Length: 177
Image (tube, rainbow, N blue to C red; front, side, top):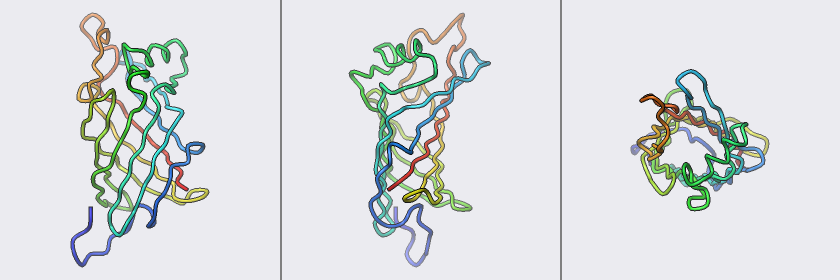
C-alpha cells in the first residue's frame, strides 16, 4: 500500500524481488495443550517471495503441512492425517500479503490472508527486518484463532474442556536472498 503523497517512509526491505531461503528460514508455532502445557512445533519447508516496487510491498509464502514437527512422531502423524491438517488433500498452508503499514521503531503490520485446509481468513503479522547473511532477515509474529481458521476438529474437547487452546502463536524468521 503506497504512503500518502509527499511522505517519505522507510521500507521493510530494499527495492527488488527477494526469495525466501528455505535452508535458513523457519516457521514455528506455539499452542496451549490441556490448559497447562505448551506444545511448540515447526514446519520444515518454508518458501516464498517478498517484492518491493516503489512503495508497494507484495509478499506470499507457504509451508508444507506434511513437514509439521512437534518433537513427538506419533502426534505429528495424527496432525498430518485427515482428522487434522489433511496434508495429502491440503499440502500447503499459505499467506498472501495484501497491505503493509509502517509502525514505530522499524516495525510493520503486514496484513493479508492465511489459507489453511482450503479456508482463507484475514491475518496480520507484526514484522521487522535486520541485515541477514545474503540479504534482509525478516522476523514476523502473529496469532491466529483456530476456530476462525476452521481448525476446530472433533475430539479437541475432553470432559467439556478444550484439549488444545484456541490461540496459536506463529513466528517466522525469513532469510531473504
